Length: 482
Ligand SMILES: [Zn+2]
Image 1: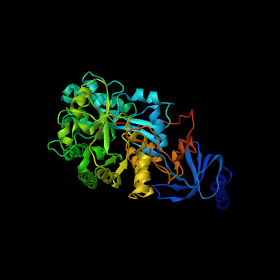
Image 2: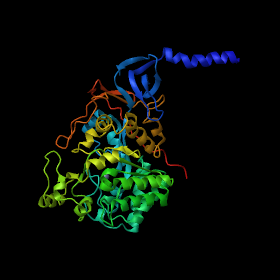
Image 3: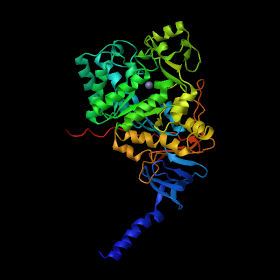
Image 4: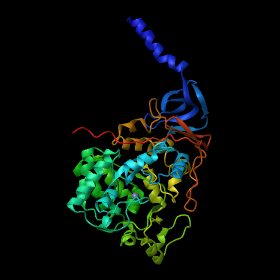
């Protein structure tokens, strides 16, 4: 081939598709923001076959044209910490701009069953870690049953595991990782019987399988032994010993008033070359089940709070000692909201550059519905303490980068770039915001005008389109050959 002919073909190859191509969807005239490249410009976005095919300042032809003028067009948000995986919660996540919501902190009790249940049935992408608490419950012959995510306080949470039980836990976690789990989830505060060595062995298993450990750390508060500082040090130590990656869940509620110190521990570990990341959610109160080991004796002393720090969702009932003891002894998984943090400390965590956003979403807490748009409303628009680009980075690129340790598929997520997955949102920066409250926790967020998941339009001009379930499983890469 002559050089001239080659150049002619090359020029045609580059220019022809832009003229001739008709995209499935074109979002036109929006302010396109990509936290990886730094792009922040008015562009048209062409989407075809679930991928972002073209980003251009030229007009694009689409079978469906969406007018994004005045809107911010961003990568869909990725929530690494979403417990509630039911249909109603999925709907709330879409209105909050979330296109991927993963159960990473603890992990579901049965990965295969979870993936089967969600397949073809989910608005947004889903995935899970392998659950250490569930594997432990199984090894203690008290398997976890729906809707329990962590076992009620008892032998499987409070007793030390025997050598044989430890082997059973590891074996179960291997099976769950083979089934597609994205890491190992450890709620150490919910299994206080787990020894330091048991924790280290789980980190060794994660390192062997080259997946991260996601964890709710062992304790909170300032009382020693058992402070937040000790709890964070334990998992950083285990990560260093084993050579595993580590993600610490909700630094806000695990570290409370020692949040800045916990951040400095993580920054120190990272400066020494360890792969340690963390997240926070923008609410003062936490939420958990009242019969869990988190409420083993001593919890009030650790937190420095009274029984009235506990509130039942929806009714707003504040608990007394008698009411607490009655509910703590109940066999059901009763959710309770726990007020133990201050707004200034939450703000410090959210605004710290190291911290990504994750909701810890559970039904009955406003964080399930409002976490992501609350960041845009409170921190970008009202406090002006985060730039819009930094907020988008904390909610899309940073969690995608964390996920890349589990699966290379995450490299196509959290970015608004040609070739990336078409998980795209477009919102009105002036009106976007959360509406859920403690008393009305299921109010969908406002301001999402378009939400596209895997190239499928889910929210069109603010309305959810029925009968579309484009969510796909995100699972780990196949185990490396040994
Ligand atoms: Zn937690």
